[in-house]
Image (tube, rainbow, N blue to C red; front, side, top):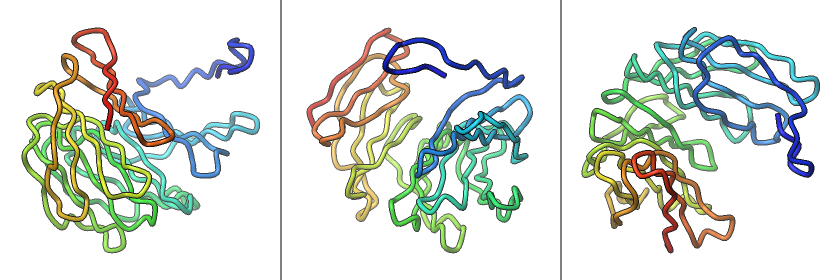
Length: 213
């Protein structure tokens, strides 16, 4: 845990796991960290850094929290499923089958729709989160890994690790709008706060691409 102002380490938490990804709760009071060694994710309270583990599916990697902070969605990389978790009871309430080797999930801000990157399935799964079912798949991306939504939920930006591209997906029409070449084997993508730029972390070329959207 790093103090941004001083750039000094304030706390170090030994998770005793192979932690993979992290996501804040909407109110910023908790951090959710996936741990694929023990098939669960960790809910960490910022006030006191108390940790509790929630058991989910096989080798979870991505994790996302609903806008109301009541539900978590764990992406089970080796299970080809999404675990839907009620955070109050820490119980898995539903399991949603998706494509091959899912890696990440992005939620719309109304909490009704989820998009999952199926790393080996060469597709995105579109989820109805009110019914907890997959409604369709979006194809046209060779190796989708990470995904972020635009501020208005109209466009999803997806990295294509083996294809070396960033793809823009029309959320309403469920299809790829455009693609642009970035660095070698891009993994994570994020957007600037003004929505004008995307940044991809390129694992294969040890650099970052800046894309003017």
